[in-house]
Length: 168
Image 1 (cartoon, rainbow, N blue to C red):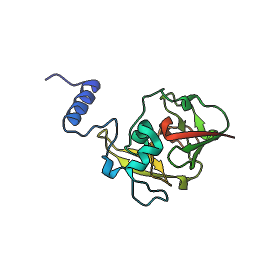
Image 2: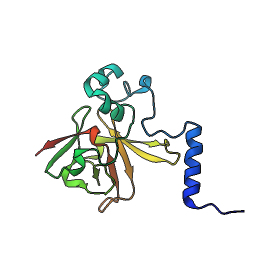
Image 3: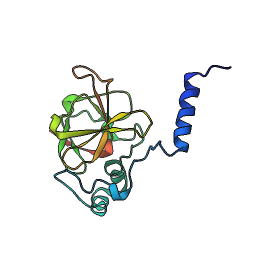
Image 4: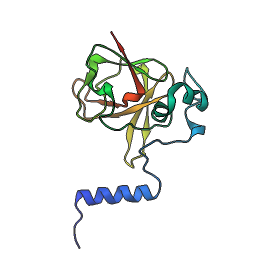
Protein backbone atom coordinates (compact mmCIF):
# COMPACT_ATOMS: atom_id res chain seq x y z
CA UNK A 1 0.00 0.00 0.00
CA UNK A 2 1.36 3.38 -1.04
CA UNK A 3 1.71 5.92 1.78
CA UNK A 4 -0.06 9.26 1.38
CA UNK A 5 1.93 12.45 1.55
CA UNK A 6 0.62 15.51 3.42
CA UNK A 7 -0.44 17.39 0.26
CA UNK A 8 -2.48 14.45 -1.03
CA UNK A 9 -4.13 14.01 2.36
CA UNK A 10 -5.06 17.71 2.68
CA UNK A 11 -6.28 17.93 -0.92
CA UNK A 12 -8.41 14.82 -0.48
CA UNK A 13 -9.88 16.07 2.79
CA UNK A 14 -10.76 19.48 1.32
CA UNK A 15 -12.25 17.90 -1.80
CA UNK A 16 -14.39 15.57 0.29
CA UNK A 17 -15.48 18.41 2.55
CA UNK A 18 -16.36 20.53 -0.48
CA UNK A 19 -18.43 17.70 -1.91
CA UNK A 20 -20.49 17.69 1.26
CA UNK A 21 -20.85 21.47 1.30
CA UNK A 22 -18.70 21.98 4.37
CA UNK A 23 -16.05 24.27 2.90
CA UNK A 24 -16.98 27.87 2.27
CA UNK A 25 -14.58 30.57 1.13
CA UNK A 26 -17.17 33.26 0.60
CA UNK A 27 -19.33 33.17 3.68
CA UNK A 28 -21.23 30.98 5.99
CA UNK A 29 -24.82 31.95 6.38
CA UNK A 30 -27.70 33.17 4.26
CA UNK A 31 -29.39 36.56 4.17
CA UNK A 32 -31.99 35.62 6.77
CA UNK A 33 -29.20 35.07 9.28
CA UNK A 34 -27.04 37.98 8.17
CA UNK A 35 -26.65 39.33 11.69
CA UNK A 36 -29.67 41.59 11.47
CA UNK A 37 -30.56 40.78 15.02
CA UNK A 38 -28.63 39.59 18.00
CA UNK A 39 -27.16 41.03 21.15
CA UNK A 40 -25.52 43.97 19.42
CA UNK A 41 -26.03 47.70 20.04
CA UNK A 42 -26.48 48.29 16.30
CA UNK A 43 -28.95 46.03 14.50
CA UNK A 44 -30.18 46.51 10.95
CA UNK A 45 -32.10 44.43 8.45
CA UNK A 46 -30.12 42.73 5.67
CA UNK A 47 -31.56 45.28 3.23
CA UNK A 48 -30.36 48.19 5.37
CA UNK A 49 -26.89 46.66 5.68
CA UNK A 50 -26.69 46.08 1.90
CA UNK A 51 -27.59 49.70 1.22
CA UNK A 52 -25.13 51.07 3.79
CA UNK A 53 -22.20 48.80 2.97
CA UNK A 54 -22.44 47.99 -0.73
CA UNK A 55 -22.01 44.46 -2.09
CA UNK A 56 -18.32 43.83 -1.31
CA UNK A 57 -18.39 45.04 2.29
CA UNK A 58 -21.75 43.36 2.86
CA UNK A 59 -20.29 40.01 1.77
CA UNK A 60 -17.37 40.40 4.19
CA UNK A 61 -19.07 41.95 7.21
CA UNK A 62 -22.51 40.36 7.12
CA UNK A 63 -21.96 37.06 5.25
CA UNK A 64 -18.55 36.22 6.77
CA UNK A 65 -16.72 36.46 3.45
CA UNK A 66 -12.99 36.79 2.87
CA UNK A 67 -11.31 39.21 0.51
CA UNK A 68 -8.49 38.15 -1.79
CA UNK A 69 -5.04 38.30 -0.14
CA UNK A 70 -3.01 41.44 -0.92
CA UNK A 71 -6.09 43.20 -2.34
CA UNK A 72 -6.56 45.78 0.43
CA UNK A 73 -4.68 49.10 0.51
CA UNK A 74 -4.94 48.88 4.32
CA UNK A 75 -2.45 46.02 4.25
CA UNK A 76 0.26 48.63 3.50
CA UNK A 77 -1.15 51.43 5.72
CA UNK A 78 1.64 52.61 8.02
CA UNK A 79 0.39 55.95 9.37
CA UNK A 80 -0.61 56.45 13.01
CA UNK A 81 -4.32 56.11 13.60
CA UNK A 82 -7.22 53.81 14.32
CA UNK A 83 -8.72 51.01 12.24
CA UNK A 84 -12.49 51.14 12.76
CA UNK A 85 -15.24 48.68 11.87
CA UNK A 86 -16.55 49.65 8.41
CA UNK A 87 -20.06 48.73 9.56
CA UNK A 88 -20.39 51.02 12.58
CA UNK A 89 -17.13 53.03 12.92
CA UNK A 90 -16.18 51.49 16.29
CA UNK A 91 -12.40 51.76 16.67
CA UNK A 92 -11.21 48.15 16.96
CA UNK A 93 -7.46 48.20 16.22
CA UNK A 94 -4.68 50.72 16.70
CA UNK A 95 -1.85 51.28 14.25
CA UNK A 96 0.43 50.66 17.26
CA UNK A 97 -0.45 46.93 17.20
CA UNK A 98 -0.38 46.50 13.42
CA UNK A 99 2.45 44.49 11.89
CA UNK A 100 3.38 42.87 8.58
CA UNK A 101 2.47 39.20 8.93
CA UNK A 102 3.27 38.41 5.29
CA UNK A 103 -0.19 36.85 4.84
CA UNK A 104 -1.70 39.53 2.60
CA UNK A 105 -4.24 40.84 5.12
CA UNK A 106 -3.92 43.63 7.69
CA UNK A 107 -2.69 41.97 10.89
CA UNK A 108 -2.66 43.12 14.49
CA UNK A 109 -1.37 41.50 17.67
CA UNK A 110 -4.20 42.91 19.84
CA UNK A 111 -7.41 44.96 19.64
CA UNK A 112 -7.68 48.42 21.19
CA UNK A 113 -9.59 46.79 24.03
CA UNK A 114 -10.98 43.28 24.49
CA UNK A 115 -14.50 44.70 24.80
CA UNK A 116 -14.31 46.05 21.21
CA UNK A 117 -14.39 42.55 19.68
CA UNK A 118 -16.18 39.25 20.13
CA UNK A 119 -15.15 35.78 19.05
CA UNK A 120 -16.88 32.59 17.91
CA UNK A 121 -15.66 29.20 16.67
CA UNK A 122 -15.70 28.76 12.89
CA UNK A 123 -15.57 25.31 11.26
CA UNK A 124 -16.02 26.40 7.62
CA UNK A 125 -12.65 24.98 6.57
CA UNK A 126 -13.22 21.74 8.54
CA UNK A 127 -10.69 22.57 11.27
CA UNK A 128 -11.70 25.03 14.02
CA UNK A 129 -10.72 28.69 13.72
CA UNK A 130 -11.51 31.67 15.93
CA UNK A 131 -13.68 34.20 14.11
CA UNK A 132 -13.46 37.80 15.30
CA UNK A 133 -16.33 40.24 14.97
CA UNK A 134 -17.18 43.79 15.99
CA UNK A 135 -18.70 43.92 19.46
CA UNK A 136 -21.02 46.80 18.53
CA UNK A 137 -22.60 45.65 15.24
CA UNK A 138 -21.54 42.00 14.96
CA UNK A 139 -19.75 42.51 11.66
CA UNK A 140 -17.30 39.76 10.66
CA UNK A 141 -13.79 41.17 10.74
CA UNK A 142 -11.59 38.12 10.19
CA UNK A 143 -9.91 35.43 12.31
CA UNK A 144 -7.46 35.16 15.20
CA UNK A 145 -4.54 32.73 15.04
CA UNK A 146 -1.94 31.71 17.61
CA UNK A 147 1.11 32.49 15.46
CA UNK A 148 1.55 36.21 16.11
CA UNK A 149 4.37 38.20 17.67
CA UNK A 150 4.99 39.05 21.30
CA UNK A 151 3.58 40.21 23.60
CA UNK A 152 0.33 38.33 22.84
CA UNK A 153 1.40 35.64 20.38
CA UNK A 154 -1.85 36.34 18.51
CA UNK A 155 -2.40 37.30 14.87
CA UNK A 156 -5.68 39.09 14.24
CA UNK A 157 -5.92 38.53 10.49
CA UNK A 158 -8.49 41.12 9.37
CA UNK A 159 -10.20 41.79 6.06
CA UNK A 160 -9.32 45.31 4.86
CA UNK A 161 -12.89 45.79 3.58
CA UNK A 162 -14.12 45.22 7.15
CA UNK A 163 -12.17 48.28 8.29
CA UNK A 164 -11.91 52.02 7.76
CA UNK A 165 -8.67 53.81 8.61
CA UNK A 166 -8.93 57.01 10.63
CA UNK A 167 -5.58 58.88 10.67
CA UNK A 168 -4.40 60.34 13.98
